[in-house]
Every structure is written in C-alpha cells, then in structure tokens.
Amino acid sequence: MHDETLLAFDFGLQRIGVALGEIRLGQARALTCIAHEANAARFNAISQLITEWQPVRLLVGRPLNEDGSAHDMTARCTRFANQLRGRFALPVEEVDERFSSIEADATLRQTPDAPSYQHRLSLNPYLDWQERKAQIDAEAARVILQSWLETHVHQAA
Image (cartoon, rainbow, N blue to C red):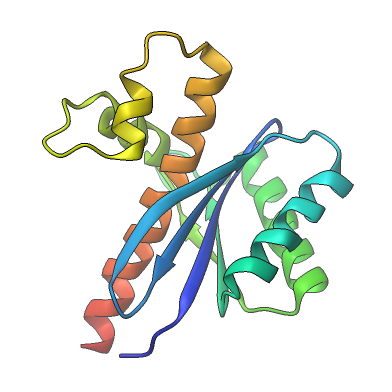
C-alpha cells in the first residue's frame, strides 16, 4: 500500500471544512476550517495546506439530493473541484457527501470514549454557533475522506 497523503474538502459558501488522510493508514482526521469569504483568501489558505501536507490527491464532497439527483450546490462544488485542478495541478475527485454533515454532527455530539480534539471542542459550552459549525464542516470533510479511504483501501487490498 502506498504512503500517500490526501486532503478532502467539504465546500460551502461561507466555510470550507478540510480533512487530512493517509492511504497507508486508511484513516482520516479533521484538520481545519477555512472561513474566508473571498476566493483569493480561500485559495491562499488551501495553497498553504497543500504546501505543508504535500497531498497526492484532493477530494471534494459532492452534495446530492437524497435520491442522488443534483441540486444547486452540486454545480458549485464541481466548479470548486475544477478550480483546484487548475490551480494546483493535482488529481481531484468528487466524492458523494450525502449525509456527511449529519454524521459529522452526530459524531461530535457523542460522549467521547477516548478524548479527542473534536470531542473536547464539542463539549466546550462557550463555543458559539459559528465555531460549532466550523467543527462540523471540518468533521464532515473527515467523513468524506474516510468514506473514500474505506472504498479505495478495500479495493486495493
């Protein structure tokens, strides 16, 4: 199994959740949330993450309706994926992200069996809604990436 780093993005109009994963380990973790509204600032932050982590592939969550049909955000996410391809010359895959935010929120609400960064933050009563939403977006990116890893690691095994 190759030792390849991946970055995944949960694209949104206000925030972009980011996760990091390793193919060899088959595990993903929430990394950060980019909360810039201006495209230049967003892509600058992404460029810094790519420079730091040196991923071999980027993943973008592709939102779909429950029945699998496209909606307004589907086209926006495809455009974002195309911009990543053009700017960074890396392979970019779109990954079905249906229910990733719901799963992310549920994960963050669980009582932690083992302390983790996400769980400690989710238990902090002083977080406002924007901070909580940033956690959910980063965790949703982790869900997207973990889903991709589980599919591709099993195929390669």
